[in-house]
Image (cartoon, rainbow, N blue to C red; front, top):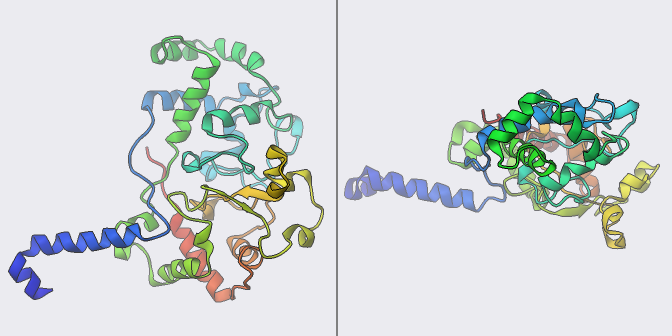
Length: 317
């Protein structure tokens, strides 16, 4: 290194070191969340107001933020959320943070994108139990909404424009530059030795075969119970456990779910579509047993959990 620096200069040496670091990062199964912005700030601000507006629900008690509180990691921490009239949902609420990185929305993937996703909780009897015919007149009573929509959209307030504003807001809910992202970008001291060991175990056990890319998941489907009969062992199988089958009616999709993103996973307990894993340690053990066919030793579980906690990022402001 010293000879190289004398002959070619420190600048070229630093460039080579950066290139090698970038090449190593490119070979990782995980990737940093992009820093670029793909939303309009003014529309996102309007969408944020709508996201917190309970008038979307039949009885004006439930907003998007009710089940996706931003101060709690983008989900409410319940096994199943409670909608209008105290009605309990069917599956565990996923986080809204970094949802724009998912290749499809909802546990069963029935919404192809964020725009399509908005209708499902609005229409669901156990969530908002409403319709656009009911919501639109209520929102049009708000003069400030009418003014903002007139400024931002040539045709003013409409269902399409309401959904568009909410999508801009949800796209803004990314959490880049967490400690793991900084480590991927070359900041070696961003992680402790124990956390790095946890990441190596995460890859070595095969967790990264499903949890990969920018979202550390969220980019394809997998059956729950690849290496063991999870539902038989858990018992009391429900319709919601059928997963993607409920949407496609194809037998090969029974018990299949979108692989969840592990971004900010330390903030989003309980885990799985059924909320059955109360802690990260529980989740890692169950995944090892039923998805990988391995009983992961407690010390390895602890190290993997230490790594998973480095996936917590901060929302862009």
